[in-house]
Image 1 (tube, helix red, strand yellow):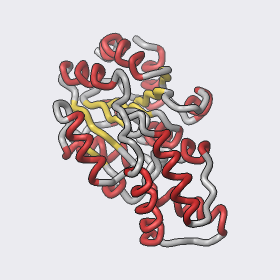
Image 2 (image 1 turned 45 degrees about the horizontal axis):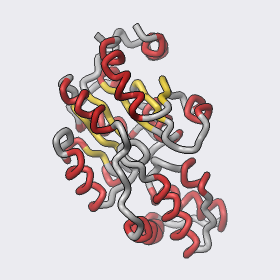
Image 3 (image 1 turned 30 degrees about the vertical axis):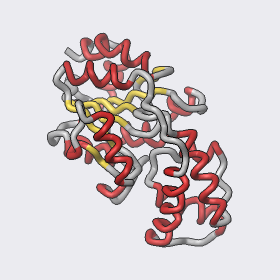
Length: 242
C-alpha cells in the first residue's frame, strides 16, 4: 500500500481508505484561472484603496471572497466591515474577472475525470466562488461527469476554507460520505488545510507559483507537480485503496 495512505490511516485511526468520490477545488485545479483572478483582485481592490499583491491572491486562494476582503480591509485600513459591504466590493472583483479573457480548462483534468467516472466514483466540486456564470460553465465543461447537486459554493457554508465546512458539505452532497470515502484535489494552502481539517485524504497539485513546502506545511497527504501527473498516477492510486 502507498506509504502516504498508510500514514493517513495511522494518523486518523481509520481502517481503510475506500474512496467513493473525488472533491475538486475549481480555480487552479479545473481551470487555469488563477492568473486572471490575481489581476482581478489587484484591479478591483485598488478601487477601494486596498493593495493586493500577486502573493496575496495566491495565499488567500480558495477562501470565500467576502472573507478575503474583510481580512484585507481589517489589515490595511484597521476597520471591520460587514458581509454586505464586503459583497459589494466582491461584486467589483467579479466584474473585473469577467472582463478578462475566458480561462482554459486545466490540461489533464478531462483525462482524470474520465478515469474517475469509469471507476464509478462521484465527482464533486468545492469552490470558494459562488458566481452563477462560473457554475454554468462548470456544468457546460464537465457535464458528462458533474451535476449541480454535487457542487459546493461559497453560499452553501458560513465558514469557508481553511475551515473544514466546505469539504464536509462536499461529503454530504456526494452521498453523506465519511472522510475515508473521498479524495480532495487542491492547489492552494487554504484549500489543503480545509481538506485536511475535514480528515479527507488531500492531494495537492502545485499549479501555481508557491513552493511545494507551502503545500506540505499545510498538511497535504501527497503532492503532484501538474495535473497530467495525477491523471497518469490515478490507476495506481486507486489500486492502492483496494
